[in-house]
Length: 226
Length: 216
Image 1 (cartoon, rainbow over the protein chains, first blue to last red):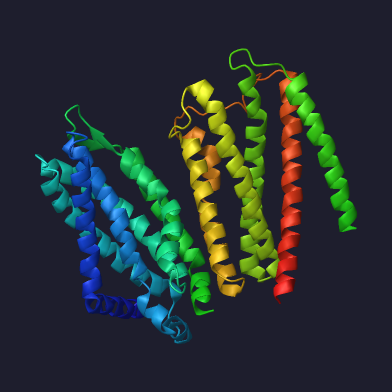
Image 2 (image 1 turned 90 degrees about the vertical axis):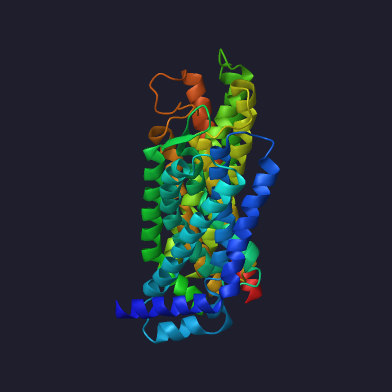
């Protein structure tokens, strides 16, 4: 457990060193929401629905940028092989990175929510917050697990930006489907609730991804140090 | 001996193939409501089962490679992914061809259709990953890991109609759903496509083994 907290500290330190990278992720999220509000402003008057959908799209696109940087340090040096030789558990290393990525995703969700409320002129932001944020946070668990795993696979490849996108998006499709289908709207477009079934789907997939991480993490580390 | 086995299986496949063609287009009657379009069903369902076989073999190969680190199992996994993807593509093409005249739409976000498209995307990603890395141990390990992750979708396809409501028909398992001639046509076309899948698996595995020998 002590090693895990040391790794976590190391990840936070790396995060603070790459401030520009972090700011660029949030800036990209802002650009996505802004672009969508510009493109969609004439197509619909249901601002709650579109604001929520723009948050979902912004989360997925901006998260990709974050995942690409997850193993930047390890890709530059032979850090993975050194850590494994020093007796660091692969599961602890990946878990620390996943936790940091999850934290960034939460911040991204809150940030894109604020931007979305402004640009889509949401009249009832609290209603949007009450239903959309818990659902997005639930999905962020599974997305951060799978994103970190795919980032590990693609970290050593010179075309990692493209490869990460192609590998990750099919695997997180269940979350996209669940996120799109979960909100309930009334006739004015106001978000009135969440279908619990889809939240259960997201939790189910997050649990499955967690089990897959636990089973396959040793092979991931072996591949990275090969 | 392997050569004799392959030749025998090929001959058997040829017989089954022509028998299934006769059964589907001559023996089996046209369905009352759907008409001749219904006959796509024989190849659509058969392709789906061949898809399950291909992806299942790929998963098994991936697991055995990670356990034994024998290149043969990696080649089996690769072959399974390719063959499974081929038949998955056939499912995704034949389905809309049937759906358009019957449902009035090429595509709908029905659970079974969506999960089938998902597994198609996942295994395209698996093959892209294999081609992006060289055939060294790193690429093999990562491809095997991704294959095992992608396989979580396979049971979902099969059970999606039971878990979620959808409009995809559930013909198999329903009692008295088909007359005898239709059942015969379905069985023959399933056997024919399953045997074709097995032959393609063997051919692809052999090709990959020869490529590996050439590289080394």
